Every structure is written in C-alpha cells, then in structure tokens.
Length: 437
Image 1 (cartoon, rainbow, N blue to C red):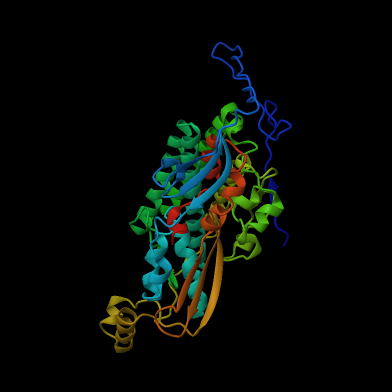
Image 2: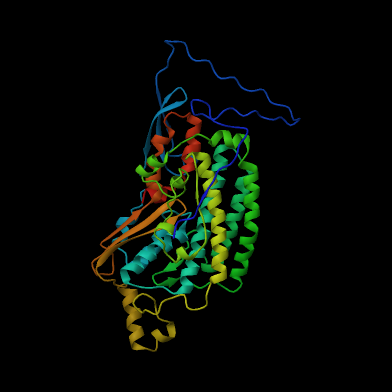
C-alpha cells in the first residue's frame, strides 16, 4: 500500500526570500494600524577594517541548548563561520549498564533516555525483546500501545513547540502547549501511577490495564485538543516575527537530509516521506488511516509545520484506536515472562517455580539478535539486542534519533547569524539523555 503523504505549505504573502536566500524584512504594523519604520541594512565595512574571528561558547549551561550541549562557534562579526558541537556532559552509560541487567530490569532505563517520550521508548524496547523471545502480544495490548505511543508523540511535540516559542520570543503559546501536556500526564498517571518516567510496558504486555472511565477522558482530550492547536497556529503560522525568525534558516535539501541520516520531522520537513510506521509497520500501524506530513523547503519553518500536522494525525490515529479497542487480556499467557497471579504462585508448585526463576534469575530468550525500529517523535528510534541464551543481553545498542539529527547542526548554522543558531538548534528537537546515552 502506497504511503499517503500530505505536503505542508502555507501561503505567506507578506514574506519571501531575497537573492541571498535570507528572509525579506516584513513591515511591522503598529497598534494604530500604521506601518512602523523599517530598519535600514547596515553598510558594508570599508576595506581593511575587517575584524578577527572570535570564538564563543553557547552552553553547556545555557537554557537554549536544551540540555548540557556545548556549541563552540567561530564568528565573523555575527555570522557563524564554523560550529563544533561538544557532547558527553550527561553520559549515563545506559548501554553498558544494560549488559548487567535482566531484560525486564532494562525497561526503567529506557524512560530516562528521551525522557519526553518515555512510553514510546518503553514500547520500542519491549517490541525488540518480544521478538527475541518469540512472543506475540494480545490484540488489546497492541491498541493500548498505539494509544500510549501517539499520546507520547503529542506530548513530546508540545514540549518542543512550547520551548521553541520561548527561545524565539513567544510566551502565550508556551502556556497553552504545556497546559495540554499536563492533561496527557494526568491520563498517564491514572493509567500507571507515573507521569514522566512511566515504565508503562512489560515484556509480553503492559504494567496495568486502563482504569474505568479512562477512555472517556481520552475522548474528551481528542475532542478538545485540536481547538487549542488551532489557537496556537493562529498565533504563530502567519505571525510576522515568527515567520521572519524561521523561514530560510537551517535548510537541508532532501539529498543532504538522507546523507546525514536524518529521520522524523527533520527529514520529512525536507520533503522525504520516511516514516517507520509506514515503511516498517509495527503494532498494526498499516491498518490505521493517517497521512505522513512532508515539507517543501527543509527549513526551521517547515519543521514547525510538519510537527503541528503530525499532532493532528496522531489525534486521527487515537480516534481510530478508541473505536477498535477490543476486550481481552493485556498480558500473554506465558509464565516465562509474565509473573503468575499471587494465588497461583502460592498454591501451584509449577507456578511457584516460574515465579522464583523470573524474580531471581530473569527470563531467558533463545540465542540470537534483532533490531526493531519505531517512529519516535524525534525520528527513527531503534534497539539492537544480542542474546547468548542467558538472562542478560550480551549487547544492547540504542539508535538515538537526537544523536544523528544533531550531527547536521554545523551544516545548518554555518553562514547564518548568531541569533539564528538558537532557532536552528531548537528545530532539531534534541534531548541530551538520548544523545549521551
């Protein structure tokens, strides 16, 4: 089945690019309806008055780097000549630690990589573990995981949208976005008791089934959230300041995006319709009706448009998931990975043995290896696992989209102004826990 794409383009009669590829100045309108005085372009320096290049640091302690990221910038005046990103300040050793943990014990570590997408990480990891164990989950669990994944996508995009507004100078959309994010946190809290680090999944199932009335609250969110998103779009999409600060910045052509290995909104904003949910379906995503939004120009503005449209598509997926949620168990009937009920563990010798071996030793998959990718809010998130038949993986490797996407920042910021670096870096949507894994 061919992938359905939706090209995102906004007609902006008030702006455009000049011959040098920079956004044209937009006449500002004063409160009385008149035009403000336009700023004149600075005159070029006379020959012989060129200054020396200057090195400055942005970060690692800087709110606009969105974590302990250090950008060393070489400037010619206010123009970036070279950018060298430095990472590693938040190194946690998730991958090495995983070699000393059983497969179920690794699940809480996945919360702490991209901590804005904890349910999505939980789902991605257990999909890989279940492939190693040869487990087929129940139909109810598939739909519940789709719900959790799409809520997590919206939640992550709302954090990106709100913080990017703060970086560029808008405050009200930040408040709207974070209010909606809190509503999703409330849904997750009622489901599993946690808000940020959910540890929502289990190998072969979920931590718990959704409580009574939970789907009604989700339907209310699905019904009301698009109105808030429309308000945010009304404030930003054709706003002269927002447009002037985002159009033409950090452009990546389709070939460049592919060569850098970009994924998620970063590559789709460049016009490449790559979405793991469509190209390598999992959790029956091929049976859901949704579009893959793609941009045209591959700049900061198009990344904004793509992420906003992705939230709308996630709402469409949630509507379909609510309609098809079946009854039934959430855990597989497999004592190798699912703890038996307490009454069985205390009355049945075989169940007691399974309980003991799971808790004291951990479940043991067959020897083998697998790689399972999913479409996280930031791009292709994959887990590669190698099993030698013991209870702990020989190797656990994370494919973090933030790490790969960040590698393109020197290409995107060179030639732009210092003030543009903030907007370009924000458009990548990084989380340092995922980069310094």
